[in-house]
Image (cartoon, rainbow, N blue to C red):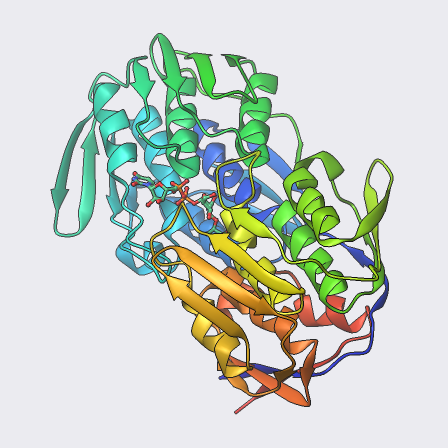
Amino acid sequence: MDYLQITKSPSLKGNVTISGAKNSALPILAATLLSQNEVHISNLPDVVDVKTLAKLLEHLGANIAWENPNTLICEAKQIIHTKAIYDIVRKMRASILVLGPLLARFGYCEVSLPGGCAIGARPVDLHIKAMEKMGANIQIKGGYIIAQAKNGLKGADILFDKITVTGSENVIMAAALAHGKTRIINAAKEPEVVQLCEILQESGVKIEGIGTNELTIEGSGGELLDFKPIRIIPDRIEAGTYLCAGAITNSSITLENIQPTHLAAITDKLEEIGFSFNKSTDSLTILPSAKLKSFEVITTEYPGFPTDMQAQFMALATQCEGASVIEERLFENRFMHVSELQRLGADIYLKGNLAKVVGPTPLIGADVMATDLRASSALIIAALVSEGVTNIHRIYHLDRGYESIEHKLRGLGVNITRLSR
Ligand code: EPZ
């Protein structure tokens, strides 16, 4: 099994290029099922989750040609069956994103229930309820969602009791092909949801309210779409992760190929801690801070502080002066990184969905275990300032969402090696 060995780093320096957003690539790949023509997608992150979804599309019959690790052409013309099998879905819960497109286009599909994951139960009840509202008949049998909509889906008013990113994306894609108008109230408005709406709008689908919590989508009545070439937006969470690496080592590093407006909640919080930035339209330089002040964070939906940055900021909090308080409001079990940070010497007190982190605490390198994607990156951030050597195990979690992370960190001066044992 691979593990990463990291030695305590002096301050970092240099530039890092941010990859395309995994959480934009996944719904956009699923959306290719709404077309029978070739779709050209560039700036894809070279990560396992993107490869897994591409494999699922090929398993369904789509033809995928990779031009390079970050660019592919997908042609979902000959879809030979509509069953998203357990063996693929269990590897990546976002496979649920094929439910909406398959049901809207073929009127029938079987999608394996994704099951929970380390950060929580992560049910898909809101996805299912929305499809039923659009006229589908849904059964759960043998661990599969069996969905039927013989005469296609019809537009409906969908009110989400909770804001769900992939739930919104499933409905947006289903509504694009449905008969009539769909209104989504309490829709997610993350940048990744916005890009999905934009590429559908560019293919001729009438969508109003893009970037707000209320969307109106005029369906094509079953007519397939034709997408223009798509370039995936930069990954705001990868960018935030590197900013935390620069912050914890009090370095000046520059991030290239970013969309600064998507990072506002992250850069605002770093400014509160004491950092400042030089910003341009597609790059950002973080500047060292004389003092790291403790902070408070509550994770909420976009444009609030992202839950996907919670673990990384917890690592940073171990070096901030005083007691920082982190409240995780989206997932019921997203503190798996706490016990691993404590192995490095972090002073963290947990009570329910609240964590209190006292700093600055000197950390000492140790063997630690990654438990989920973002927790893995938090351990890397902590390892940068942990005395001696830290070995991070189960880094398959990391490879799901961070492209060439050790190569990028080495480019910033980090002493990091991927080893096997
Ligand atoms: C997306 O997951 C992201 N994944 C997650 O990123 C991210 O953490 C999450 O949104 C929140 O921002 C992708 O976009 C592929 P949700 P998603 O549905 O859509 C509850 C990463 O690290 N809920 O917005 O699965 C759910 O349990 C990943 O890249 C229901 O109760 O999250 C959670 O408490 C991790 N029923 C809350 O809503 C449902 O049917 C938000 O979940 C759906 C969701």
